[in-house]
Length: 216
Image (cartoon, rainbow, N blue to C red; front, side, top):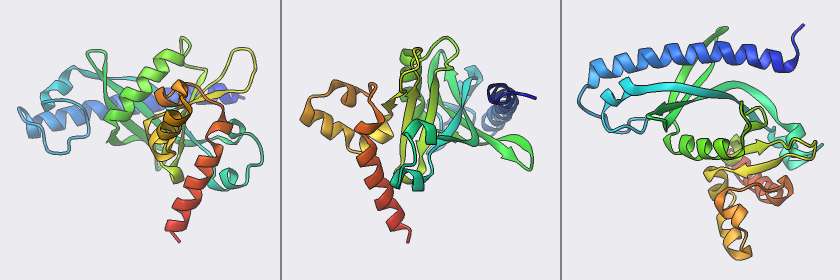
């Protein structure tokens, strides 16, 4: 019987194959339809669709989230409440530069690429992963709180202490962490450095409450 880590590795391998296959089809279709141009609102950071010929699927990572009920009424620490969504995202790079992300999920039991985008997120995320990650990025988890429109990179320590978090641009904006950093003089908050979950818990709870209320 496979361990959770082995299951994730198997899942990641299958998702990666789907991302690679899907991206090859996407590139072929885009070049056939739009060679020499760039359609308005194109989801990846290129100047011409032909630039995609030099792009590739790089590494991938599973997307985790925390149930909004657990954010509003925590039953344990933020890290322990994070659960996999079943979705993977893969960095797309060109000349060793991030140009976007491919989103991969299971549809009718088969891994398929469902969307492309996240050019800004890919740059923010790749920089933080390179800075905080170990050789295979096994000490990192990407956590998206959908109801707060906020992304975090969880960074586990090697000595068993509580993980810390790098708020990505979405979280820094949605939770007003940048404004708070300017008031407190905290360079970590401003630059997306590592913070304890307690440092954003109140802002995250308020954002989730507000967004849930808007859907009622």
